[in-house]
Length: 233
Image 1 (cartoon, rainbow, N blue to C red):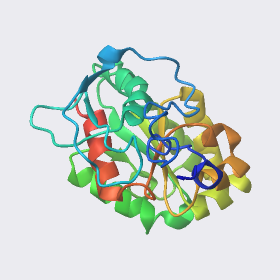
Image 2: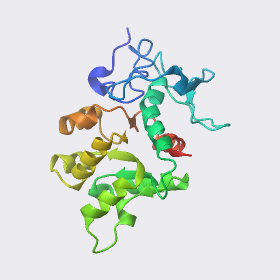
Image 3: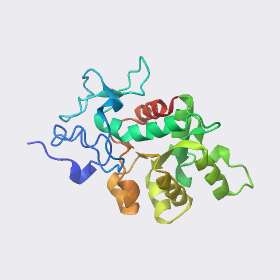
Image 4: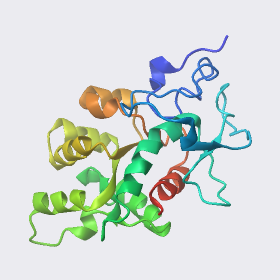
């Protein structure tokens, strides 16, 4: 008998429930705890079924959201579409606001030359403009003031959740202040990397309650492609 992965993975990511061998069939459209409310079936366009190569009854259910461009081969689970649709709607609402960056990258200081820089570089290689402290805060500038400006001038916030990020949030450092501002705007996508949602929930229950994406379930390269599609106008 297939066993539920919830005790280990928690079904916290957008595709976590769909990939559970026990619950995938029942919860292929699982919402998690995103807090984004309901969505309309018109928010995505069903595509042909195509196996994703993952186990679980719901893993073969794939769709393309309405913001996918013609010819795109990127496939999403229904849960991912539900998670990302409200964020996409806000991207579209702010499309006419000039000089906005596509994303604000919230990360731990310890990751600035590692995972955060890699994510930044991958996004920019896809044409996504990223506010990144390593390049956008000049020597002598007020760190908190520049972060405030970066947040205000970005369409979407990406939170790179790593073990180092969890330590910084627990210590109430700069990452914690960025996170608080992003949570208030309700325009963020958590990217869990080298850790778990269970560990995040222990440090930040509010962020841990949000659905997101995880490199434990799909490669960072695939996540970057989805983020690039999400903010493309």
